Length: 455
Image 1 (cartoon, rainbow, N blue to C red):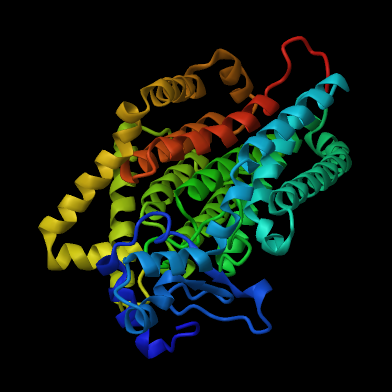
Image 2 (image 1 turned 90 degrees about the vertical axis):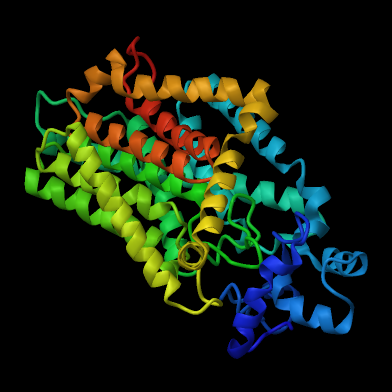
């Protein structure tokens, strides 16, 4: 069924747990018709133009071949799967990207531009999320095409950001007046790159997540074709990019009144919350539970409230209420239109024990890396804990906070949000790692050099 009618979506959607396809067949795109055909097909299950998944072929498969899950139907699905077809070519791409970024970093260091690699790295992540803007599946060298796209976009982005910041900096200096320390060019570069990363994800999610289809760092349809606007790792990118971008902005413009600062924090945070939580934008279950408390605490801090544990508890309760509201709205839609948050809410009403079992299963899955891959996961966990402590207690960071309005508060709130996400999503450590990767890169660039040398 390459273009299923809407009245058959529910039936197809209900079959997603029945067939229990093996990974990666139940996670992959079957056909990306934007580049392969003269007519762009539309998937009812994912509601994405140009994307057709295994789920959309489920009903035809059981009628024309044999029950889905048998060897012949698996072979047929794998032959049609775009990602499987390009898997061998794309396997080394992550190593290649890391190697190229390291090489660019070495060149920049040799030229006395060490910290520019932080900005380049953040922009490379944004580029990796949008690789679907070029028809790389049709290229004879998919990996080289993807890598070239990332390098070109990140390099152009770096030039644009640096030129823009250099033009903006004199105006900021005159607005701040004498006696006030202005952010360095390298600090504003990285903060702008973090904000660009968050903005790319939000804008794409708001407009249907079209750029992320089959992208290297974007989302793939999950479990039966459901496509999410913001998954866990994207939520972490947005959380860190939004918070650090705000810190840099408020530091660069300290003359803003408390009312204006509150409006800037509240409006920008509300945009992030709505895009991440609204079901029609492909809500991820943990997003509202993360951004609800984060936004409330950030607004309270901007209003001058000295945050205490009771405020955190109230914000957490508000986030839980918001999550329940979004879940109820999502569950009220038909089975073919729900995200997995609405499906969980419906399951909670129909079979509470099954819902509880699912929560336990996902929690165990979140902790699995600690005992399955202890050599990697345990040191990674210790590094994250150390970064959490340093984000709040570091003397060098605290000295910088003294001149950065809301710096300590917003950073601490973002760290809290990352831990909430890690403890309530099966992504776990990966969500924390993604948030700290972006946040630490920006914070390192924002801090002044101890030696006073360089940019």
